[in-house]
Amino acid sequence: MTATGGTTTRAAAALARRADEPPVTTPRVPAREAAERELSKPMYHENDPGLLQRAWSAFWDWVDDVLDAASGVTPGGTLGLVVVVLLVLALLAALWWRLGTPRRAAASAAALFDDRPRSAAEHRTAAEAHAAAGRWTEAVQERMRALVRSLEERTLLDPRPGRTADEAAAEAARTLPGHADALRAAARAFDDVTYGGRTADQEAYVRLRDLDLTLERTRPLLDATTPGAAG
Image (tube, rainbow, N blue to C red; front, side, top):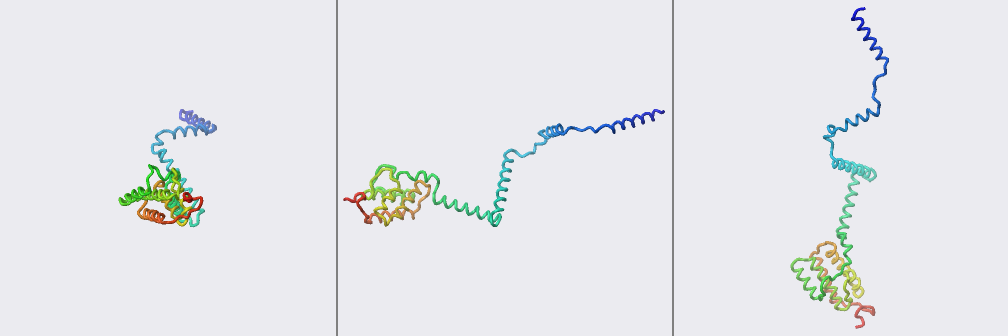
């Protein structure tokens, strides 16, 4: 046998042995762990979005899902949903404008008079001074105080510290029933500008001034339970 023939025979025998052996494989769990270790290297995550960007994307994905679900059950689909949202926003804006800021409800029970006692004439003078300067909010406040003080001076109301504008209007309406609605409106205007963050205008002041002057000329409806009725 020649050297070449021997080499060929040995190579053929080696190939035969390898064919009989099972292929080399890596177990599944170690392979997965190795892949995870490889993919966890920083070089693979240099262009990943940041935490804030991922959270923002997740939020908009959620919004899209909600809108898709809502538009699916709203008549008119997406257009109908837009109309519904606009109507809700318009309703909220109207309620906010009518009721004022939330702090109004908590503060609306505050006293009508918050400083030293002054006469109705003094409050009227202060109101007219504010009106002449265009300070309509302050003018409305002082005119309402003048109106209530005038009723106290006429003994149609008991002078009582801590009385609110709403309470004064309700009590005055008992002896001035023909002006009950106007009195309630005046108290509401006072509360709106004093506690609700609203701004008064000339029209609001003129209404209150006219009511004050009208009540001065109005004969009250007195009975035995009315303050000063016995006189």
